[in-house]
Amino acid sequence: MIDTHAHLLMLPENGKQVIENMKYDGLEAITTIGTTIEDCRESVKLAEANKNIYAAIGIYPEYAKSTTPEVLAELKQLAKSPKVVAIGEIGLDYHTEGYDSETQKSVLVQQLKLADELGLPFCIHCRGAAEDMFNVLSENKHLINHSGLMHCYSEGAEWVQKFLGLGLYISFSGNITYKKSDRSFLKNIPLDRILIETDSPYLSPEPLRGTKNEPKNVRYVLDKIAFELEINPTKLDLITTENAKKLYYKMGK
Ligand SMILES: [Zn+2]
Image (cartoon, rainbow, N blue to C red; front, top):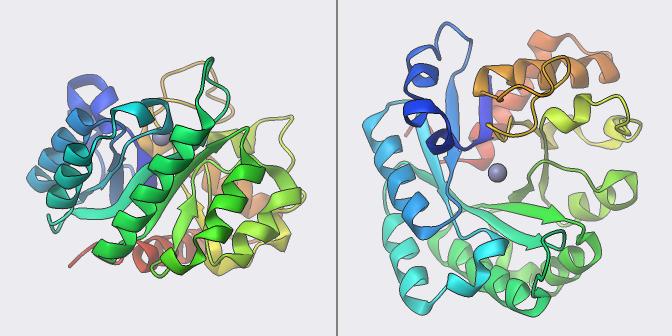
């Protein structure tokens, strides 16, 4: 299994124990995600120090205002590391009180440009902003040459075909295991576009809700999707692992 989205820096001792136990837990790789420039610097360091850890770097929508030209230049520099596999998480979040959609959209586009310039895929965070997200991505389709993923997908059946139509991957975290989650549209997603993740330390899957999440719990996400699709989990593991390596093409190189 590959956990395509975790925040290792938010786990005890920057995920030291998690990294040590990876093999035992059936984890082939973990992508740790940056959300601020400080976080991105540390994520790259952590990835460079550990064989099967990779980094995605980007400025989270909540911190859009901090994305100065200097910050973008530093991201560009950091992305040169062989361990940086994507630009993210970037996106739109209209849940946070006092959000500024115009700044968020502009910073998103600047980071989409950066991803394209660097020849990297991007990792999208989208909360309560599906329509604006789809519009921004559609208007900037010329920047989608190395694909990207919709992280922690929660926009339901209505939007999934639209994002797939843009050539993106759909990544699921613990929220797909929740009792109230709509899983009916899973079968309409081509198998070669599905990814799994934990978003650790957030979003612990059923039956672990309420505890601090960690990458090994990606197994519950895998099992739930396999159950819904009536596929052997081992087979789905092979498929999603291959998908992750295809999108995050710098992995293992
Ligand atoms: Zn995240």
